[in-house]
Length: 279
Image (cartoon, rainbow, N blue to C red; front, top):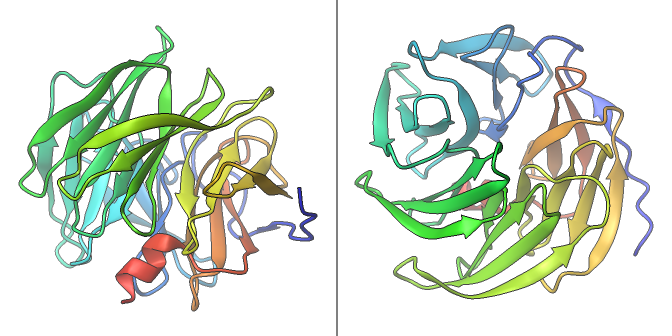
């Protein structure tokens, strides 16, 4: 494992978000969005210089987790209490239900392919099991796999040929071949850890996975072949998710649930979704 001198710095004040802070995502202008700003069931916006504000209040009964942007700039939110994927018009701030699937335990984190197909992890925390869904651009949901471990972080590779999902309680990260029709096959173990859980994870433009090690307070950088390349130490311990942004896509933003804030550090390659939005 290579040594990594990167250390995180605090971007937003502790306690600005609740302990449910999750799902960071950057828009094209470099603003960072995360769920549960000041109180549950909200979305907060953080400017590139760290100024935080309330962006939207979610509908009654909805609580956000993962956030992603499509190529048109629309925001999608995994609403785990409403069993929905919500869509936000960034200009009007209108919120609509893009997909509703009663068979979901709770849509948790979401990933997006280059053609705007969404993928959602769907854990059942009480049973330590999970599922994985595909949500097409018309909002139709398809179960990709059931009977899994506690599915959590989910991501698509830069070439859109691999889908990754991790299982928090089982400490495993799985890789699948992803077809042009967005079906999965050839499930294989990418990496397994023997300590601490995992939460959200995102790829850089080279396909390396940056995985939040919840409770350990580090970000594990894992190659597409499953090699642990480095770990970046954070100031908080309960890191829930990560995204990439900044002027060049090489600024990582991490949500910390124990401190209710966002930390940041620099990487050497831009994030995969930042590259997608800036093509």
